[in-house]
Length: 385
Image 1 (cartoon, rainbow, N blue to C red):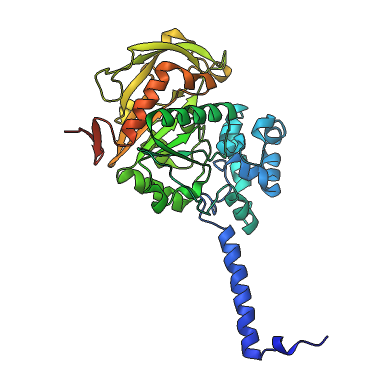
Image 2 (cartoon, helix red, strand yellow):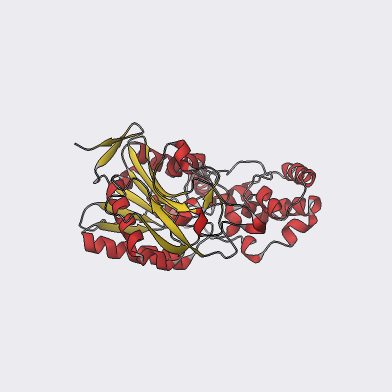
């Protein structure tokens, strides 16, 4: 074959061209190996179940040490394409559901430690994350709100859709600017600066890269606003401690299953306070009621509403006793100069049209966006003058 003269190059130029092509390939490969959490972590019983299921060698190691664990997973726990419940379970927790003995877990942990983490594993682990910043047009109105809906864990479409529809209607009534995204790459300093608050709509699973985490954390600490709805604080396992322990301030341990949805009494605390003002002293409603490892009050949260545990049956999986005694269900807290509000109410679509709860969300969003009667400074709530 004759090479056209226009493509004929000298040896130095050819070498440079090949080097450039190899460099592009390396750059493209590096782009796929983004800075996702746990990308380089060794396999262990703390690994996300989805990562073990994605690697045949890791899966085989578990099968050898604990033959019945993965073979008998419920279908909703075994998915390897997000959103999947396997993204919010560790191997340890999956074994706990089956009540496997501790000595069996030791064997599983040892077997997993022998499985090398390959480049293909790193790429598979990072595939759940996105890095291309979306183009977001902020509509007219104030406050400016970003509704964030990236979900890699459990996605309950009816509750997500109902919350979005309710918030859009609320924004229209109140003249708020509301933009919606399901991209973690929206968490950049430049994009976040456009918004007074970010609302996490039943977000489940680890959804942000390390760079995106840092951008959102800085946004909050420097005066941003956060509103978390129901599933945004309901994962069995978290891989970002700051989110669970500082931003939310409580770790989910379960919800009733007999039955799952029950009527309970919601009690409003400090009705003269910023968020509770104009709310009824309490109301009854039916929902899926979360319980937490410890009351967020213990870590400095300002409790807005709590559950009367005598009005429903707080029994979880296998008869688990989910009583907390002090059982907050909606609360606020200061994170640096930022304002954080979380409500565990909101699994059933009907909750988003319940008048009392609508009023609570309205007040919470106004406060989180910086338009309430108080502000946050260095972790403390200060009344506006």
